[in-house]
Amino acid sequence: MTPVSSRAAHDAAWHRLLDAATEPYRRGGRFAWHFARGKLGRDPVFRGMLERGLIGPDRARIVDIGSGQSLIASLLSVAASMQASGQWPKSWLATPPRTVYTGIELMPKDVARARESIGHLVPAPQILCADMRTAELPACDLVVILDVLHYVDLEAQEGVLCRVRDALSPGGRLLLRIGDASSSRGFAVSQWVDRTVTRVRGHRVSPTWGRTLEQWKVLLARLGFKVQSVPMSEGTPFANVLLVADLEPSH
Image (cartoon, rainbow, N blue to C red; front, side):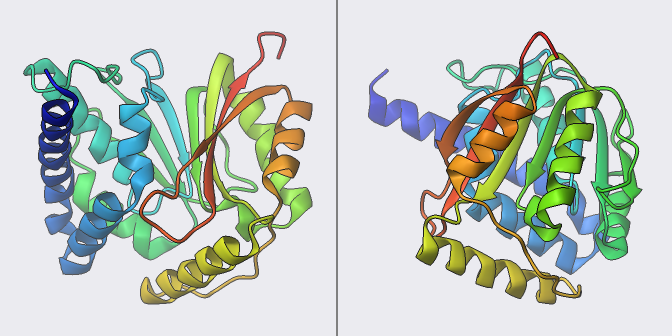
């Protein structure tokens, strides 16, 4: 298979996944469905995590902090179905065949939309309306935090990450997307868009606290993580970076 045809096959698989993963959100109303389509369709992080094999088959217990409408739960449910039916691209690493998902989201409206849309999945996702600074984190193999840690101050950020470390199994993984504050233009654009989307979703805009990419890496290393950074701004004007942080065996 040539690279061109391989890319076409990957695109086709992604679009099947996108259509099936967003369909349940019609249950939650027009806003829920349109938001799911826009977020999964335009944000490169979701496809990027799958294409790069960052959610492997042994990472079944997942905690999604700042889960919003819990799109990851729906995405992984459909991914498992596609793998079972032989529709998964052969070059993509398998995802868990059965996911134990816990979403933690502060905004009640998002929690309600998520529960209405995907509460019927098997096994049923646990979607909690709670503050990430204080919510109990169950034992898990993978924690996902996308674009929300900057909503709490620097001390609270470290507190959340310490609790994530303590909840992860040996060799567990954190997928943390951050805005690199050293890229002033991209960081400013991402913050402006973030505030705009927050208002559209009907939520109050909170102050934010940023760090440079190097500062995030130093913090995670100090907490016992081995960190790789993956640019995750393709097709966007943002300064987003996905940090793949694996817990060192001694922790």
